[in-house]
Length: 423
Ligand code: EPZ
Image (cartoon, rainbow, N blue to C red; front, side, top):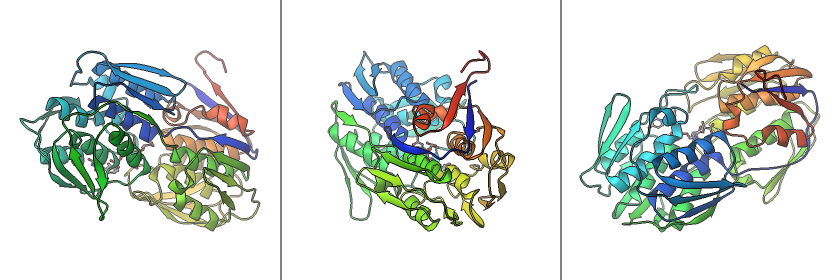
């Protein structure tokens, strides 16, 4: 299994261009199941989770071509409406095929996505929504079997603004004639991008004045072409890496307003950011990093996916900073690994107390999840000496060309395969 070998202690400098959003690309690729007509998607990042999703589409009966970040999805005969556990266990987001398959075939059998390192991650909100739309949900032998004699429009209030449930239910409701209203929905920019794509396919999804989503379902949707929105989590990760290494970095091709709360917190910590239309410039800063408390929350709150990279920055603050992880129940696995690198972190339930140290020290660490892995890479970039990050397959899920982008910013990072003893 590949590892990253990082020789840290260098300031990042230069420009990095952001890729398309993983968390928009995955549901948008799944949404192509709603039509048999061709769909062309641009700026689809070349990531492990994208390749898994393309495999799922092929398994279900789609023809998939993917080259230079453009995916062309066309029908290739009749669609299947079941998925094997082998595919679902690799990626939780595969459960989102349930909405389109239920809408098109009135029945679907999908393995329950197991939990993952960051939490149990149930799908009760998805299933309650499907029941409101007229489906019967049965769980048997680890699978969810969805059946509906007829799907009917409904008013659904999500008990929590789940990103996945919002997207799954939207995709289903698009093919249910009549008016479905979803309340207490997720407002993440990735959800907006899925809505934009669905409406290009002929769906009719509008936002009501109270923030609810109003769907006027159709009998069929057509093919569409779409460019995936920039990845706001990749954007925040590179800005945090620039800050932590005291660098001078421009992050281009992004949507700065998607990370407003992060910019505020970084400015409160002492950094100067030049916010442009589609770029953000981190100016060099040698002063003290002030401790700033963050609490993760649904958008537009502090993104849970940036909690780990943020924690790495706070390990170098001048004082003690609290990090509250209020979205997932087990998203501090990077903390003990950062402590191995000399950080001073005490975690208790959903709160991590980070007391800044002068410098991190290089060490051999291992990633347990995608964003925690990025936090360790950033720590390795800061720590003088050689840091080895194991299990980079976690990181490959969500950061396109990571070592190439960091090398272009002046980092010394190489991918090493110990089994073949080659870089
Ligand atoms: C999406 O996951 C993202 N993944 C996650 O990014 C992100 O952390 C998360 O949204 C929150 O922003 C993709 O978009 C592919 P949720 P999702 O449903 O949809 C609980 C990354 O690093 N919940 O909003 O699965 C759940 O357990 C990944 O890119 C229920 O209880 O997140 C969690 O505590 C990690 N029942 C909270 O809600 C449900 O039916 C938020 O989950 C659904 C969710």
